[in-house]
Amino acid sequence: MPQLKVIYFGLPGRVEPTRLALAIGGIDFENKILTSEWAEMKPKVAPLQLPLLEVDGQMHSQSLAMFRYACKLAKVDGKPLYPEDPYEALLVDELVDQVSEVFPALGTTFGIKDQAEKEAARAALVAKGGPVEKWAALADGKLAKSTSGFALCDRLTMADLMMFVTFTLFRNEWLDGCKPDCFDHLTHLCKHKDKIANVPQVKAYYASNSNPGVACFKA
Amino acid sequence: MQQLKVTYFAFPGRAEPIRLALGVGGIDFEDCVLGPEAWEEMKPKVSPLQLPLLNVDGKTVSQSIAINRYVCKLAKVDGNPLYPQDPFEALLVDELVDKVSDGLDPLVPTWDIEDAKEREAKRAELMVKGGPIEKWAAHIDGELAKSTSGFALLDQLTMADLYIFTYVCFFRSGKLDGIPQDSFDHLSHLCLHREKIADIPQVKVYYNDKTFPAYACFKSSQASLH
Image (spheres, rainbow over the protein chains, first blue to last red):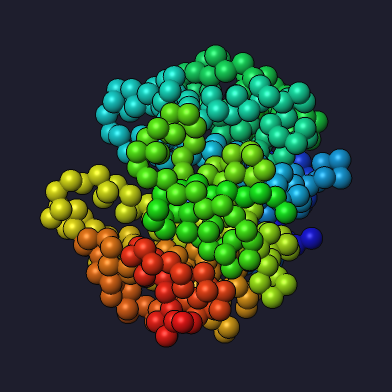
């Protein structure tokens, strides 16, 4: 197993799914939390941006690439979180990329200086049919077709972790303008959140984590 | 082998790496080309899914990179799939593909600029040395410089090469007003890579029969096979 170091701030951000996958798979990794060191580190790794995954001393970027890698290493009940069958993997990759579509829209709201305007922009993201809600609704629709309650393949996959982390971020107080009840109308998504939070390895990972930024992931 | 159908517009765009991978791997597929009106009619039925779409034995799947990764697992060149089976090798490919794919992002808002002069001016800003697209191209050029074989990674043809090739050819096609064909001439590794991939026999064969002007930019600079 390679020496792995996940490098990011003390926030979930877009690297939390990678941390979670490695933890679920029982894979040792150093969880490097950056504070002021990023200013010094930035020019040394440029043009790579955070988050970073250091593999045997070599830096890698791109949050979805590192997440997919982690999901190939991490196994639950003997099966990797990223399916080995190409077609199953296609369905997982599709859903992960669909969930990921919410980030460009969210990104535009961070630059808004006026607080009221920012909150209104955020509320619009999660309003019915909005650029974030439409993907949450799509995910909810896929869950509705599942008998197991897992998103795909009737087992825990990369897609479940992506949905769990990403949509939960919108359902807590962390993003001004997004109310915690914003996805309450998506009943399958709500059940899914509880299901994944209660997967023993997920529960254990967050139970011992005192960082307030991840409180929303606790069962 | 599954029945595959690729649905996209008549031009290269985000489906080109997919079509090229299938062509290079010798995998049969139905190339379903939609005109703008046909897409307008289809759009509400598949929303929020966007083109390109892949149909696998009747099941519709979206997301261009996901589709591409799948076909690159099926497509082999010299016995090697275009998407590596080794997780670390795949990480390298995924990382580079994501970086290459991001290159199109600064260009996307310029399509909505109606005034031609304004659109060209905005695009020129992106292409200037240090501008977002030039910087992106320079980074890819730097990654290619590390290779002894001339392939982007692993000294063999991978999904990453197809992405770099199709995106670089698109920028150099002369079809984007405001973006001159010689835009990346100062990036020697990028230019060499473009020639190398265009000259791969399976790539050359794939583009040989394509007469639609949008495909001219992918053809080998050397004499055609005819």
